Image 1 (tube, rainbow, N blue to C red):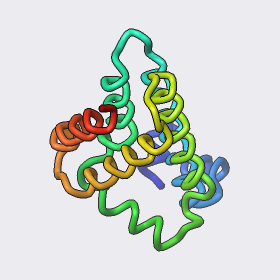
Image 2: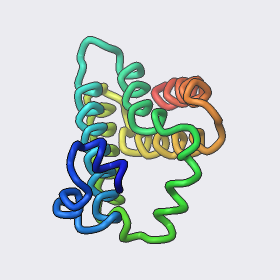
Image 3: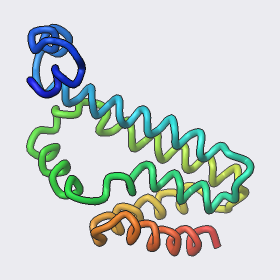
Length: 150
């Protein structure tokens, strides 16, 4: 908490005034990061100057690729240990992501957009747990996007 307060340029008591506990601070930090990522994903998926496949790869990279690495195994365990740690964001953020992707796929004129979106999300999750680097994730994701878009 001292490091967080110092980075925020406030006192530790000031930090506890804003966030009454470490779990609340953690939840707010995760919520802020996910909201930022989802806003960037919405912008990326809305870009009309790029093919749908490139927009999808960029969106999935923001959603999943940037989290490949040491935290991949740690966060799910922490969340599983205490479901209240992240509050409603644990369900809301993935639903928002799925809707953004589904809308982009539908606008791209792809048939069976809901099924393809859900399958692409499942493929992304599987890939995330099978690779060690972001580059490997992206290489495999490109194949999944190509297969699912037809």
